[in-house]
Image (tube, rainbow, N blue to C red):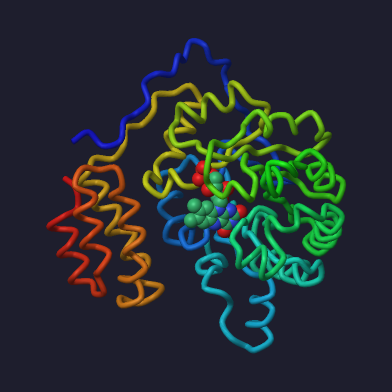
Length: 350
Ligand SMILES: Cc1cc2nc3c(=O)[nH]c(=O)nc-3n(C[C@H](O)[C@H](O)[C@H](O)COP(=O)(O)O)c2cc1C
């Protein structure tokens, strides 16, 4: 079967070259201006490794790390969070995203990440809409109601991380009736952040409806100094090109679509440069890629835990390919390498 289609409907003659320029987050160059989004449970070292192998992402990001949990583990001499797997030795540039609502806790962790781990960027999560983070921990998108506290957090983290740049990732607001992204953006910039990423939905939207790129774009004239990164619903090279053509953003960030196509960043980067878009890997190549991903997860977590973790990653790889439903049904039950290899051999779409 032809795997997911390669975009052919871009009129390259129309494109100003280059369509989008690399930009800086503090002293960190983001080239190309296409970022890999943080995704809890997915964008661990194994996934990032695969994205790096394809190329095309100017900045990669970890899953969000709970700052309070990090401090607790540290004080109890436990290992650092699993979510920091690979971070110390990994290639750069790399952003680590942290969340909490206490300026001191976030500053302490930001400082450790900047000095001990020497990460390229410390990103603060102000966008997570999940109840556990908002209602229970009064963090993530919950903080969009309190721009003043956001400002205090950012100021403290910036001071603790300097010269490592600090960025913020937000949604448009808490609800459709409380959209305050422009005010929040000004607070973020005023407090010393080096970039702002905006997911064009409110927290109440979760993932419903479409990301509102007009609203993302409307923030740009209100920023004096820092780059604006737009995020939401970019699932093809064509959509990335159109985002740069139509909207006033310095960079774009891609999340969900890359779980199914980690090569999308490379395709988008080529399209933005006005170059031919590399084709999707063939299905046998995609199968090899998934096995490579499994190998990386096994090396960290051991075969048993890796096999269970791999269920969801494998489902992502198969999504949208013919026979995916059958594959998902069987892969969702695997617990050992042998079971995984058997299911892949028998059911991975080819
Ligand atoms: C499974 C999953 C986990 C996510 N985890 C995070 C996270 O840890 N931090 C964050 O800022 N956003 C997180 N997001 C939101 C994405 O980074 C992104 O803002 C959102 O998915 C919209 O982009 P997309 O349309 O390209 O997927 C997550 C999204 C998904 C689907």
